[in-house]
Amino acid sequence: MYILPDDSIFEIIARVAEREEVEAYVIGGYVRDYILGREHPEKDIDIVVLGDGVRMARNVAREIGHGTKVTVFKTFGTAMFRSGIYEIEFVGARKESYSSNSRKPAISPGSIEDDQNRRDFTINALAISLNRKNFGEVIDPFGGLHDIKNKILRTPLDPEATFSDDPLRMMRAIRFASQLDFTISDETLASIKRNAERIRIVSAERITVELNKIIATKSPSKGFMLLEETDLLPVILPELSRLRGVEDKEGKGHKDNFHHTLMVLDNVASGSEDIWLRWTALLHDIAKPITKKFVQGIGWTFHGHEFIGAKMVPEIFSRLKLPLNDRMRYVRKLVGLHLRPIALVQDEVTDSAVRRLLFEAGDDIDDLMLLCEADITSGNRMKVRKHRENFALVRRKLKEIEEKDAIRTFQPPVHGDEIISAFGIKPGPVVGIIKTAIKDAILDGVIPNEHEAARMYMLEKGKELGLTPG
Ligand code: ATP
Ligand code: MG
Image (cartoon, rainbow, N blue to C red; front, side, top):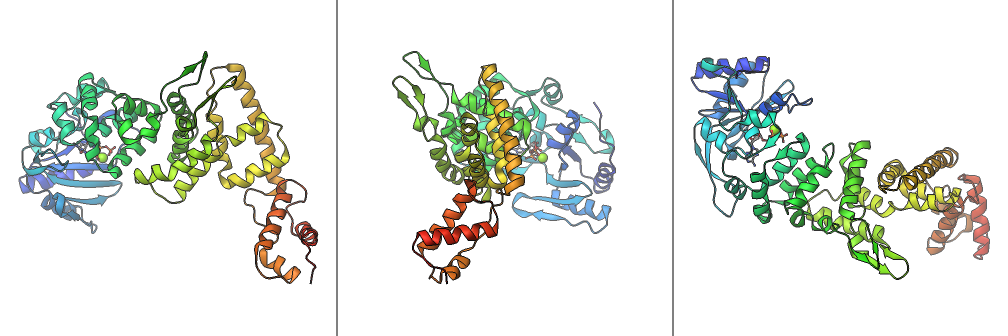
């Protein structure tokens, strides 16, 4: 089969390859995505040359001109440059050999076959010739084209060696399955299961990159089911794995919180691309196993799982080397608040309860509402309908109160120094007491969120506390 994207960059590489008398091939992800016709194909192009990759990169960059700047990665023997929308990386074809305690192989120059042998999946081992003799020919030693057509992920060589050599490939298998909606072949899947423990030799950073790519897919539940099925999940995120299973007592069961969580994750994913909001879905019930209790006459309870769950977030983020910045605080906050909108609709939807929720959620209120609606996974259609109607009511109220009171970006209408100078007092706990009283009065609708009203209220509160103005 002959194919090649109609792009002058390949013509340029071919021209240089011929002049320099080296063979060059496009290989890997670019070829795969091009054949798949993926809507947003990776714009990084990997070029393998039989010879010196760095030298080739320099020659091609010179041919392109326009001051194209080559970056060389000495330790990897690779070089890259940007050209238009592309990021093009060059490497000399190589052979790899692994030792048992590291995923970093010893490398030596090799043939194009050697280079294809070191690739992780048949669909990632496809190469396209850029050489005059067979320009555009697909070099497919492992049936990668067939596997693309049948949507199958399979290792080119023995899967045991492939995964044992570099266990990160197990994560990549599941990531590609989820991302491309492919099936992992039985033999490959069984091998992942046998090698799952070896994922421990891979750094948390590398695992997390793949985990986030799984979370970013259209229905991430597919990837997480595979992670669980292959026994990788208990190693990389045991808290999530522990959500699985149901317990029965006195004829009362509870839902399987693993499957529930994955449904919530997919629901959120269908409403938002934001991976951090998706993380909140993944972790919203994470403390259910810890807080689970069977109460006579009531059944299963998970009291406080939202607060305990929120407390678990920093630990999980730190272990997975996820950022410990405002993204972490956002996930922690939403996990902690995830029951609030639903609690609101179960009671009466009072203005003051809505204001308090707006105050605590701030600008994340819309995300919280999305999470909370995604959390309704009951099989009971009447119940679901009722919940959704109540949600519509809460949304209306939120809008109404937000327009009226601007609570979302709440700033105290009376500041500490104003309190200090009004009563001629020194800074101290009493200032905080008055500030809190003002805030509560606003949230409870006793006074409007305005300076003059708040000032009057401050004077009143001060009097109660035995202070006199002046
Ligand atoms: P994407 O860019 O969407 O992550 P990709 O397949 O292009 O997918 P890259 O990490 O860019 O992945 O790697 C480019 C190519 O290098 C892959 O297609 C594959 O042939 C090879 N490759 C990458 N990582 C590994 C690995 N851990 N083991 C074996 N081959 C790999
Ligand atoms: Mg790539």
